[in-house]
Structures are given as C-alpha cells and as structure tokens.
Amino acid sequence: MSFQQGLSGLNAASKSLEVIGNNVSNANTVGFKQSRAEFADVFAASLNGSGAAQIGIGTKVATVAQQFTQGNISATNNTLDVAINGGGFFRLSNNGAVTYSRNGQFQLDKNGYIVTSDGKRLMGNSAANLNGSTPVEIQIDTSDLQPSSTTKVTGQLNLNSDSAIIDQALTPFDPLDPESYTNSTAITVYDNLGNSHTIQNYFVKTAANNWNVYTTADGNNITPATTPVLRFTNTGGFDAANSTVGNVTFTPATGSGAVTLELDYSDSTQYGATFSVNKLSQDGYSSGRIASFTVGDSGIILGRYTNGQSEELGRVVLANFVNPNGLKSLGGNQWQASFESGDELVGAPGSSTLGVLQSSALEDSNVDLTAELVNMITAQRIYQANAQTVKTQDQVLQTLVNLR
Image 1 (cartoon, rainbow, N blue to C red):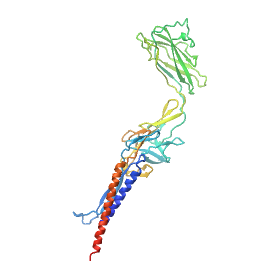
Image 2 (cartoon, helix red, strand yellow; image 1 turned 135 degrees about the vertical axis):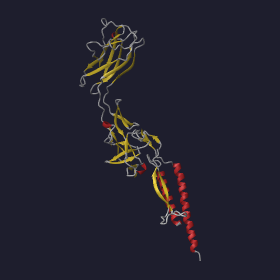
Image 3 (tube, one colour; image 1 turned 60 degrees about the vertical axis):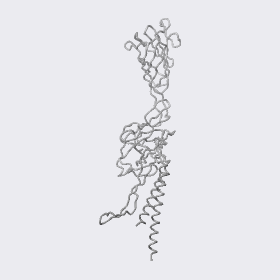
C-alpha cells in the first residue's frame, strides 16, 4: 500500500511543481493571474464503515485554483494601455464570440476598432448610447470634428471710471483713429464653415457711467444703427436695466452665411482702476482632427482634437462574475464563461463590484516570485520525501523476499 501512497505523493508534488513553474514563467505576463494547486487526501471505501485505524491511501489534486488578486499597476506611454484597478474583466469579441481578459494592451486597427494584439475587439457602449445596457464592439470615429459657428461672446472687463469723456460730435468714432475711442478688445470667432474672423469691440466713454460700444468684423464696422450702450451704477456695478448691448450680425465673404453674435458684458465693472480684460471667451470653434484620446476611470473614451475641443467617443464596460474561479481558461490571457462561473454582470467601471480604469497603465502579473521560489523548494523537498517512502518500501519488500 505504501507504494501507492508514495506514488500519489510524487504525482502531487510533480503537479505542484508544474503549477509553480507556470506561475514563474508568466511572472512578466500582463494581467496574468497565478494559480495554486490544492490537494485532498484519499481513503479507500469501506463496506463496513470507517474504523479508528483507517489509513489513507495517498493524496490527489483537488483543483488548480486561480488567484484573482489585484496585480501592481505600472505606468506606460500608450494611452490605449488600460489597467483595471479592482474587480472585473474586459469584454472582448471575436466575430461575436465573447471572451474576458485582464490584459489591457490595446491598439487601434485600420477600421477604428480598439483591438487586442490578436485582433479581438474591445466591447462597450457607442458614443450615441454611452449608458446602453447591451455592449457593442467599440469603434472610434476618426473623422474630422465639424466646426461650430460662434453665437456668443462673453466679456468681463473693468472700464476705468477716471477715463476722459469723448465728445463724439467733435471726434466721431473711427476704428483707425485711437483718439476716437477709449479702450478696445479683440477676439477670434468662427463662421459655419469653421473660418476664423476677428471681432473687435471699441468702448467710448460719452458721459459719466455711460460707454458706447462699437464693433468691427475683420476691420469692417458692423455696429447696429442704434449704438449699443453700457451703463453702470454710481457704485461701479453693471446697470443691466439701462444697458442696450445685444446682438451684432455680419456676413463673411467665405460663403458661410450670416453670423449673429450675442455680446454679453454683464459681468463688467467700472471702477477707478486701469482698463483690464478679466475674461473674454466665445463658444465657437473650427474643424479639427483627432490628436489623441484617453480612457477615463469611469470608462469614457475622450477624444482630443487639434482645435482644442474634446468629444466623448465611447465607453468601455466591464464584466464580473459571482464565481470568477469558475471561468474556463483559454490561454492568451483570456477566459470564457461557464456554468460554474455563473452569468456575467456587466456595468460601467466604478459601479457595483467593478473596479475603475486607469489609462496609460497596465496591470502586472500578480505572481510573487519570492513566494513561488520558496514554494518550489518546498515542493522539491516533498517530492524527495515521497521518493524516500517508495525506496523504504522497496527495502522492506526486499527484506521479506530474502527471508528463508
């Protein structure tokens, strides 16, 4: 009987060494999860029930269980490298066949799909349906971002209350004559085709607390027939009730059609300080090409364009399981759902039991090389000890054979 016990021990130690060797060989594999060989003792079945003197007949491998603990996060220079910090798996599609992975080494193929090194497509939500419940293959729209015409110019100024009053009967406004206006600002705006135009506002102090506002577009005067006026209270605040600054319209020669701008200077002040422009902005932009994109911690893929704009291009979703150890390993850093793992639980990163994402980073293998080398020494000693039991049993049998 000792031969069987020793042989089972040798087999168990050999399996343990195989598992350890596999862990060590994948110590540098991104997203790899180490395994652990688990053993159980074996007893012969007894028709008469178990007895107090029952002796086991060895050991067996009960299971090889993967350890889904978190690996270290390492920074990279590729924005399409994505690490999962917490629970969950990337959902991958291979012509509709779904697999799962913790390896976040992705790239963009010629059709705009985010894919793994072997061509499997990352799944999530499209830009048109960022909160959808049915994951699809993520395809990045790499076309140019359409321009947006400017509709509003917002300014926050301080007009110096000590400025001299200009008599416009003697000095009518002329954008080419600096003596005909007190201060001016300029900003670039865009038409429907994304062409830029320079809008310049001129402020003329005509009386205490009163400022006329004139506007030019590309040097052409587009001031309305009734000159807009900025009025302030005697404490320097903006007098919205008596101010008449509103819309101006101009028609560019680019063929884009008329552009109407709302001028908003309601946050301006008139204090006894030098003229200053504290804020000047507009809401239009030219066309732009995608320059880069990143994946946020909630899975949102944000594209950044050459015109300074950004756009949500899709969303990465994660899947998790009640029993991840029930997943079937396929190799290639991938798993497949099984009856033991249960149904997938799909959601946005950071929700429920799902971890968050980190762009320009990868999850390292969770193999602890120091621990594995210690385990290797232990398995080697166990193998030697079981071999010794076989040797000892052989010697006992030899002694019996030699009896006369």
